[in-house]
Amino acid sequence: MSKIYSKINGTGSYLPDKILTNYDLEKLVDTTHEWIYERTGIVQRHIASDNESSVDMAYSSSLEALKKSNISVDQIDMIVVATTTPERKFPSSAVLLQNKLKIEKGFAFDVNAACTGFVYAIDIADKYIKSGLVKNALVVGTEKITSLLDWKDRNTCVLFGDGAGTVVLSASDQAGILSNTIGSNGSYKDLLTVNTDPEYIEMKGNDVFKIAVNTMGKLAVSTLKENNMNIDQVDWLIPHQANSRIINAIAKKISLPNDKVIMTVDKHGNTSAASIPLALDDANKRGVLRSNHIIMFEAFGAGFTWGSTLLKF
Ligand code: COA
Image (cartoon, rainbow, N blue to C red; front, side, top):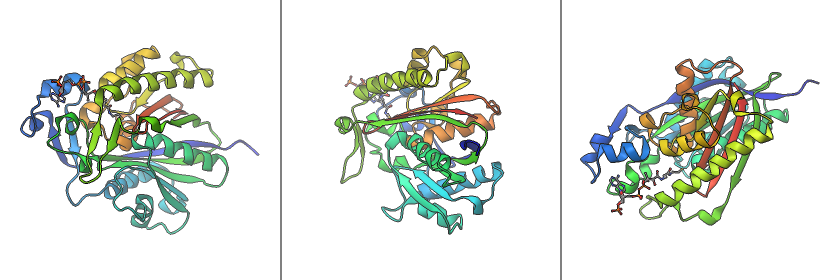
């Protein structure tokens, strides 16, 4: 029997209509466009409306990904949704999405690994597909992360945005996902967290910044080493989009030219688990990704959690 690979079959994304620019934020908190742009690379972010949930966004991005792939909704046998902002505590967002898509078979569950969630979700779906148990999986990152913001806290409210991205991952006899690495260390739990009552994001930005650069930099180097690849073989780095300075530092660490880095943080802000699938779909829609291109995902988030994926597109 030939080896089973899992391969990206289609991508889709969704961004809410409402755009909040840095200039808009100047009216809400003591900040400036220049401060935000210089420190983070962010220019604007999308904000979900009151009646729009992370599941609604996941539904829109999934419909698009399904349309772009060559499989139909009734061929989906697994749904994994990476989110930290589920519509309900239960049923999971993945089950709510399954229901919206009118799927009544297979299984669906959520993954919470904060901003690393999508890479965790890819890792899990990849293993199910390679084991032969699943043929087609919907892998989603979706966040209404602005629902966790204190709009009076300039340290955090300028950084985040909402959105969703979906990938259809399918069994294939052609190489697709080449490797995944995921990890976590809860001793950093208080550096980036959501407080209760009220539920607001709290972050020690400076500490997070340094550890994010270090962790993703090392991870990118070890991913190349494990796959016996050199940097010239990598076509695209698609990192978690939190801060352009973090992204540039990772690219520098692996000597990757900036024109091989997909950057969407300027348009989207930090959309947590949605950021990598949003950036992937953005690049795909711009037509820059070719079949067999080598793509590297690098992610980092609260916990801390981290993850790296190397794949052939
Ligand atoms: N506008 C203007 N000033 C601001 C501000 C804002 N929106 N937010 C913070 N400041 C101020 C601070 O109060 C501080 O003032 P002080 O020196 O008078 O106390 C000053 O700017 C510098 O703050 P500092 O935190 O040292 O800035 P920084 O250069 O580290 O940049 C971040 C702040 C948040 C942009 C940066 O630390 C960062 O990106 N961290 C990582 C965030 C991240 O990626 N999180 C998610 C990981 S998944």
